[in-house]
Image (cartoon, rainbow, N blue to C red; front, side, top):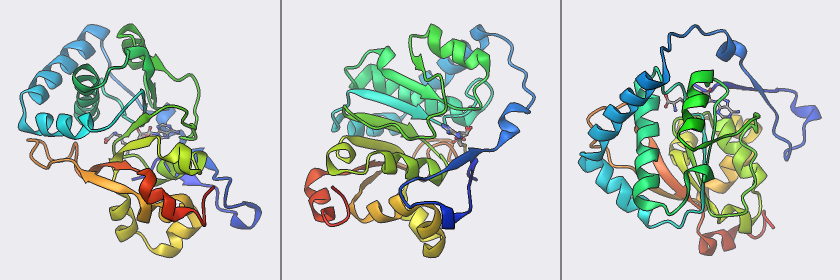
Length: 241
Ligand SMILES: C[S@@+](CC[C@H](N)C(=O)[O-])C[C@H]1O[C@@H](n2cnc3c(N)ncnc32)[C@H](O)[C@@H]1O
C-alpha cells in the first residue's frame, strides 16, 4: 500500500508538478527500540544469512553490470524493528561493499518513518541521512542507484518527473517495484491521472528481475532493477528533451 495521498484537484495541477502529501501516521506509531547495539546485531545476522545465499550472489552479478557513483535509498522502512526492511538494508550494505566502488558517505538515506535511533545508526555507520523530505524528486548528476524496494508508485513517479530528460534518466537505476506490474495492476485512467511520468516512461525502461530464490518470499518480491538505456530513450525524443 502506498504511503502517499496525491492531492486530487487535477484541474488546478499541471502535469509536470506532481504533488504529494505524506500520511501522518508515521509520527504517531509506537516503537520499542532498545539500543544501537541491538540494531547492529540484528543487521549483522541478516547480512550473514543473505551473504551466504545463492540469491545474493545472483543479485551481486546483476548489479555489477551497472556503473554506480552514488546511492539514494528512499523508503526502506524501520529496519530496527522490521525484518523486511532489515534484509533490504542488509542487501544494500553488502552490494556497496562488494560491487560498488563508492564511499559510505555517498549512500544517502531518507524515510519519514525513521526513528532517531535508526538515523543515528546510519550516521554512525558512515552513511548520509538526507535531512528533509525530497518527496523523491532528486535530480541526478551522477550515475545514481535509487534503492526503493516496495515504495509507493507516487515516489517513483516523482523521481521520473525530476529527471525528465534523456541525459538525467539514463543516469538513473532504480531497484524497486516493476513498472510493468504497476501498469498491469492499475487502471490506465488512474495512472494517467496520478502517475503520468511513470506510465509514459514504462515502455522505454529495461527491467531485470531479481531472482525469486531467497528463503523469505515477501522481502524482494516484485523487485526489479529498472534502467533507461540511452539507445532506448532515443525513441522517446518526441515526449522528452
Ligand atoms: C510500503 S513501505 C515499504 C517499506 C519497506 N521497504 C518494505 O518493503 O516493507 C513504503 C515506505 O516509503 C516510505 N516513504 C513515504 N514517503 C516517503 C518519502 N517522501 N521519501 C522516502 N520514503 C518515503 C514510508 O515511510 C515507508 O517506509
